Every structure is written in C-alpha cells, then in structure tokens.
Image (tube, rainbow, N blue to C red; front, side):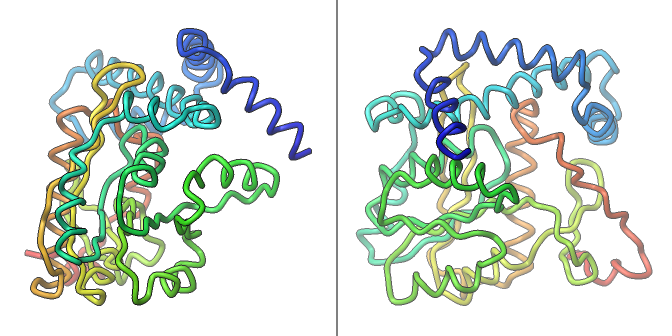
Length: 295
C-alpha cells in the first residue's frame, strides 16, 4: 500500500507547475463548492475575526484561502521532485539572520504561525541553515500516509524531525549541540486551564507556554518568522531576530510578543493563514481563565 501511495504521489510530483496548479484549481472547486470542507468553520472564524468587513469581503478571503489551502498540499507532494536550486528559487529567505546566530555560537528557537506553505519552509530550512535543524510535526494516524509524509519532510538526513507527541524524547537529541529548532506556535492547546490567554484576531485565545519556556530553558536566541506568499508558487520566509538569550525575558512576555507579531502578519495577508482550524473551539471563561490573561 505504501508503494502504491508513493507512486501516486510521485506521479503528481512529476507534473510541471502549470499542470499541478490546474489540478489544484479542480480540487478547490470540489472542496469549496461541492464538498464544502469545513466551510462553516472558515466563514465563522472570518466573521468573528473581521466583524466590520462585509460578507462579500469575507467570502472573497475564504475563496482565496481555499485556493491557497489546495496549493499547499499539492506543493507539499511536489517536494518529492524539487531540488535545492528549485526550492531556493521559489522560497527565498533572509538566511543571514540564522547565519549570524550560527557565527555567534548560539542555538536558536524559531516561532512561527500556520502560514502557507510551512512544509516548504521546513525543507528550505533543512537546505539552508548551517546549524543542526530540528522541527516539530503533528503525527498522522494512518501509517501509510505517515510514512510517505516523513519521506517528504525529511530532506536532510541529519535533520531531527520530532513528532509532537514525542517532544521530550526528541529534544534530548539536541542536547549539547548548536541547533535551529522550529516550532509552529499558534496551535490550540488542549489544557486551556494552564494555557496563556491572549487577544488574537478579535477574540481571547489560549496559547501554549511551551515554545517560549523551552527557549528560556535552553537559553537560546529566539527568532520570529513569517511566510509571505509573493505569488502562486513563490514565497518569502521572513525572519526577525527577537532576542539573543530567551532567559533574559519571561515566558509570558515572549508568548505575548509572538502572538502580537503573528496577528500583525496574518492581517497583512489573511488568506494565507489556516482558517479551517477550529482555533477558538475553547471559550474564554472569566472565572477560570481571567487570572491567566497577561495584562
């Protein structure tokens, strides 16, 4: 079964980009107009995040989101046949930020949000950073697809890709090494009673404390990152050096500053963020959560 899926993915990956995007357009039509995949979630998220926008404006963002969403996954399959020259042509980054950190002998924690195409950003980092690169991914429950996705995501054999449910064991592999550790930090935490609640896109939302606390424990430099979609099939990986040693700051401040950074970048290009995620499925309860909101 694995080989069958892999052959199918390679057949898609071998398509030239114009045909790949024609296929993406077809999938977009099916997902948006026929299936309506998470359409209610997307439109509800947009309505509450942009209450002053007209319905037509929010629908326009939703349609662009679905196109980008379909592009994201076909572009991810395309990684099977993309070499370094092709990658660096299609996703450019200010890698000097990480080069400078490397020259200073520091390790670095990257904090970023779910902006398209984060899978390309993962590969671009593996191909361009001088330090040991490590990233976190959400494990796929279907073994066949989990194996295929691991093959796609692991470009550099020395890179350390860590399943989110095995974070402690994975981080142990980075001990005593100079590394770049990338973590998408806008996920919905499970235990909201211990999360940090922050205003995010017009509503209170819980955030994991771990990304910031992990950087503090490691005394690592922190870099905030954002992916900007320049045009179809072309991205810019923009990095901002936040601090040289996270231990000089407190966890709440780092988390709050990241949330504000992520929100500002999302507002610049809202159609490029993952609106299909039920990001606000947990409701803020003043009695339970008020003490957790950073003032």
